[in-house]
Image 1 (cartoon, rainbow, N blue to C red):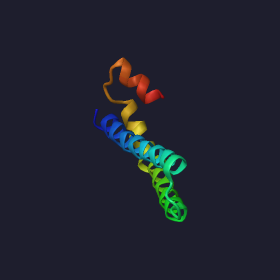
Image 2 (image 1 turned 90 degrees about the vertical axis):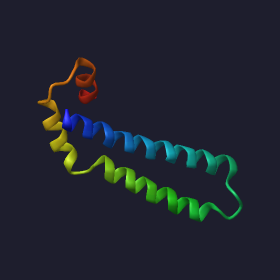
Image 3 (image 1 turned 180 degrees about the vertical axis):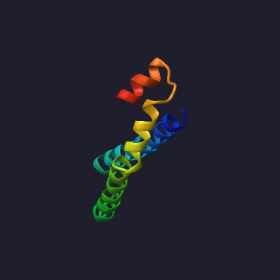
Length: 82
């Protein structure tokens, strides 16, 4: 399950950054300090770029292909399919 586990960890990282993005978005809408919009916008743009790069990383195709041939249980197969 080497490649399946790599995928799980990779997508956990993406989910964590997505969670951080949601928190920052909420904070910007609810409690943005006066004059903080420019810095927040730049940070959010950088975070979005990082999430995109992780989501489109070239190794993901190879990891998906190799994970399909690993010995996985039904739940892992369903997760891999999704």
